[in-house]
Amino acid sequence: MDFEWSDDQRNLYQACAAFARAQLNDDVVGRDRRHDFSRHAWEMCAKFGIQGLPVPAEFGGGDADPVTLAICLEALGYGCKDGGLLFSLGAHLWSAVTPLWRFGTVEQKQRWLPGLCDGSLIGVGAMTEPGTGSDAFAMTTSARLDGDHYVLHGGKTFITNAPVADLFLVFATTAATTTVVGGLGCFVVERGTPGLTIGKPFRKMGLHTSPMSEIFLDNCVVDADQMLGSPGAGMAIFNTSMDWERSFILAPAVGTMQRHFEQAVAYAKDRHQFGQPIGSYQAISHRIVNMRLRLDAARLLLYRAAEAKARGRSTRIESSAAKLFISEALVASSHDLLHIHGAYGYMEESGIERELRDAIASTFYSGTSDIQRNIIASRLGL
Amino acid sequence: MTDISADIAVFLKDSPSWADRDVHIDSSTELLQHGGLDSLGVLELVTYLEQTYNVEILDEEVVPENFGRLGDVADLVRRKLATG
Ligand SMILES: Cc1cc2nc3c(=O)[nH]c(=O)nc-3n(C[C@H](O)[C@H](O)[C@H](O)COP(=O)(O)OP(=O)(O)OC[C@H]3O[C@@H](n4cnc5c(N)ncnc54)[C@H](O)[C@@H]3O)c2cc1C
Image (cartoon, rainbow over all chains, first blue to last red; front, side):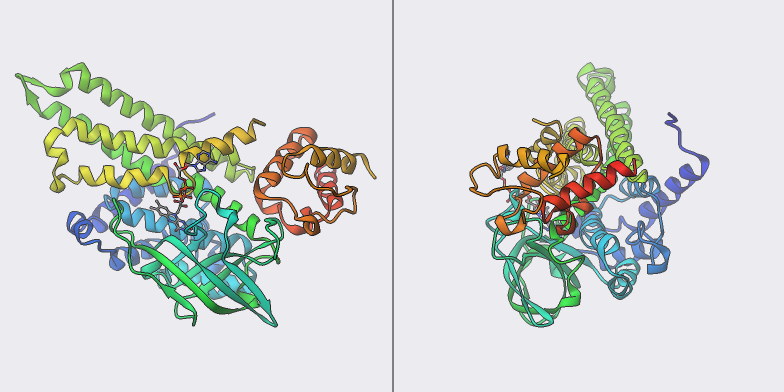
């Protein structure tokens, strides 16, 4: 077992972090205040190759193996302070790019993947409904086959990127029964399709630079060849994409926690109270040690999941464990950083209060912490 | 009915997500026509198969072709055992 990165991996990390630091941090505080999604930053990321990282080169992607993917995303989270942008990129990668890459026909991949990789198309998956969050498969949005097309009807909520997205991967029931294997489909719906309406952007606690809204489907007609996978494969598509999402959606958070840790150490050495650097007080130094322990454990869980994915293994425990632990560690790390900075951290200009607001959502999206524990328990046969 | 099909039938009859359905189960049983498996039922069945037969079933394999009939599920397990 080798815990060291190769020189190539270290160089890749440095290059991604340097790119993110130089290109993605423009006026983050102001954009957060204005709830501004940066299309410019999105395009810079696409130019750098982020949006197509795991996609085969023939469809415009970077062909990155899972470990390389984790390294790039960790570095991105280290350099980039825009948590909303990082989250929008994750939603795009795991809920739009991944289902197309894993389940699309060659024609579907040729049609949509190059645009999703080069930044000209923004995508997202639409699963959650007002009545179905954790119990996602109990959805009521339906798709009725009518000749050579499907008619979609229903609505989805909490859809990341929706206000700016060009492609929606909509999950809908295709059978009259509630069965999930065989009764669920995934449809690629393009913005502008008659019957698709995008709701007003939501105001939320954090991730302000990642826009979100409802979408409504009212007799929305899509061609049958806009369905992904074989008929009734919706559950496999959703679970497969979610497994990639749980493995990697918080890869940037590991980089973010590295940045928190370094910032905390520097401040604890610099800030003096009662004639001493605050880091000389155990209350502060032990808190920083805990930050470091969580960071190390988070990184190990991320790369364990990536390594298992690289070997083509089923990663249900590894991916849920990574999602669960890193999300809770990110909240704790942001809170610790705020605590160590006292009132300075509480001020908007510090950017630290924003990091905490952004972090909290991570224990909800991609399945809440309770649901991750349920998944792991069921894999243990409990 | 092969042993694997019989095992799965016994497992399904006892599983909470299938137990209260009045359906005779054998290898030709169309699971989908009888209400199919819900998400919890699928997870339980996949965990059971992996632990009983020491095989690994990927999420992308949980499709109607492999889980439509009870016999399809048994065939999937048999293919996995054959390829080691
Ligand atoms: C920032 C953000 C972005 C999102 N983006 C998207 C998106 O792009 N596309 C999309 O489809 N969805 C998206 N979602 C929705 C997300 O997937 C759901 O919020 C999530 O699945 C939980 O559903 P819910 O919020 O309705 O909570 P509920 O399911 O109503 O749960 C409420 C509480 O009950 C607990 N609970 C529920 N069931 C159980 C159980 N069986 N055991 C133990 N505890 C339980 C939960 O853990 C939670 O604490 C997003 C959410 C957020 C916060």
